[in-house]
Image (cartoon, rainbow, N blue to C red; front, side, top):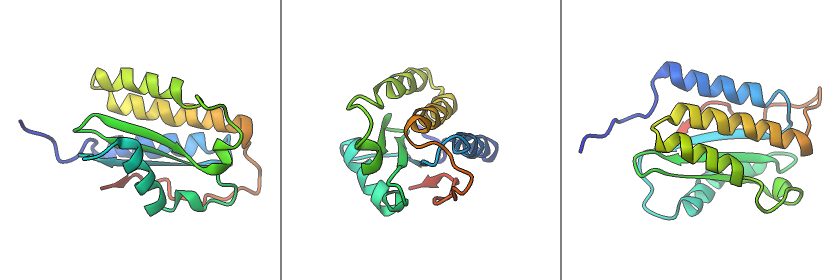
Length: 145
């Protein structure tokens, strides 16, 4: 079976970056998207590895989020840092993940990721609102493995 080498073209990647920038306007939280074709292990385990490798855990308020997608294997996970996990309910990401899954099952990867980014911003704003002195602690660019 033939698989594409990349999930998104340059224009679509820019749409994702723009979604991150828009979402971060309402929260001091930081959102990172990581894409890779394959995931040979549990996606949450792999997402945690990537989370630490990319330094998402190094934000001042411990409010970084990683949206991890292994697109060829149809696996994904959302990981929030300890500052988020300390204040949100245990099922905080469930609704977002269900909608993402629905989009992904229809092959709507761009829509699913952009939805997750927007929802992450909206949800984080409740606990970590944006302040005038907030700085962008993580690159908004997509990381790829």
